Image 1: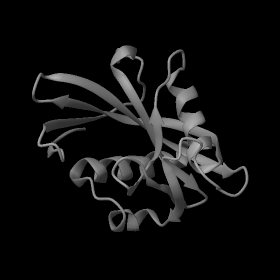
Image 2 (image 1 turned 30 degrees about the vertical axis):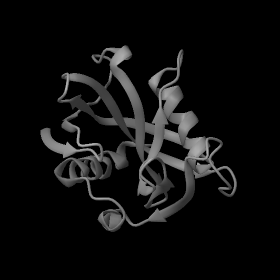
Image 3 (image 1 turned 180 degrees about the vertical axis):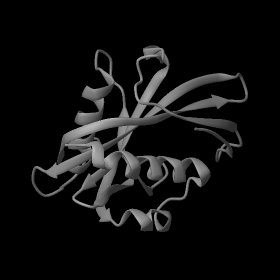
Image 4 (image 1 turned 90 degrees about the horizontal axis):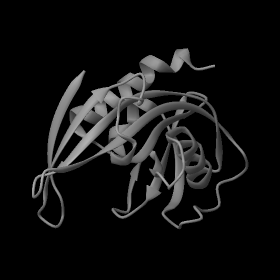
Length: 165
């Protein structure tokens, strides 16, 4: 499934978000992939985090560091931002985010996973995420509403969840 959203950033910059379902990220150029986020399930609830540049609720994840695989980044970010361990995961899809000023673009990857707490969440080492919450998947729009792309990410996560061990 392919979806497109248009977004005007706070600085007035226009962005184009093009979402595509994907069972693998192998066909994407690694140098253009910048972020990895997940719809993380602890039992039947989604883990969300509060903070970041926008000081808002959203999915857990972050930036790919030099030398990391996508999966390594994903697992590291989940531990850092929620103090939870990824038990199993699958790709959901990706967003191609284009800056309309110069048509430069990057890819943001999305996974679904099952997680297990390592211990209580205290804080993100980067001080980005300041609080986590476990919510019913049907309630996610009370915390963040990313339009049709957000709906597809959550619905695809729920579709793929039974395939996780």
